[in-house]
Image 1 (cartoon, rainbow, N blue to C red):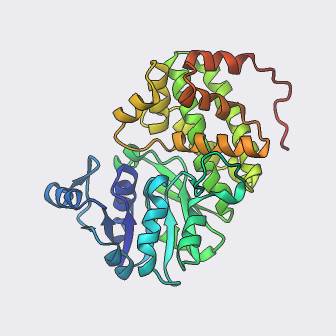
Image 2 (image 1 turned 90 degrees about the vertical axis):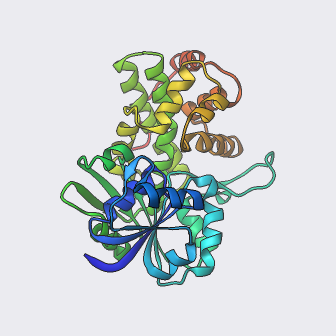
Length: 341
């Protein structure tokens, strides 16, 4: 086991699962923002319902993370990501490597009514590069349901980065007998896979909640993948990433798993609950909600027509019922199955 500590920022369910995986090969520093949470983890030896590996040390200091760890895994919600990076940035140096695990987008625009373009919508790697001196940046994405990772069930992930050394370091730190790690140089495409599949996972939860059957589920997943690729190309991702583990692999997992936060969000919407009610009932962030808001606004500004995203936006923000949304999608005329190859 390496004496060099590895940092994880974010003690939610996924951050804790990542920390436990890393602890198989390294000593880990796990950061939680709330001092009370830090004390609770130290006292109980658990975080987000998971037993914490003894090789994991808990901290409330970003400076301690940066000082002791050359490799850091930020795993915090996208709405808090830029703020976290700006707080971490004074302690970062060009030698640091950051591999984030956040599947969301950042919209850094003050005027909520103005048109936006691709330059206003940032992935988390772009936020890191904007707000810090770090050069070696990557992401971790794939079918990684936290509860299954915590249970030690077989799984795999993708480390994406334009730097081979980041991919190789990610493989070295994370790989174990039942956790496989693949590499991909298309950082932007892999990030977008993780972001956009959350939209389809919310729709999948609605399909399940309305008990529409497996035919409907297959229809949604296949058309959802097409929409992901359509949006991914518009946001400068590569098609190849969407048919890999971080794309269709993650999509199938989150669109069929009751452990997925985004799937659960859709299921609750299908029960007739409002968005506010759903968010109040959920312990952690369903990233797809914010992603739908951002992508809908970008689509309106840029003349894009992502049908599933636009329909879900009506459910979330315009009081359309889940049943009416499904009826609308089924009535929409579709002539071509695959039009991006």
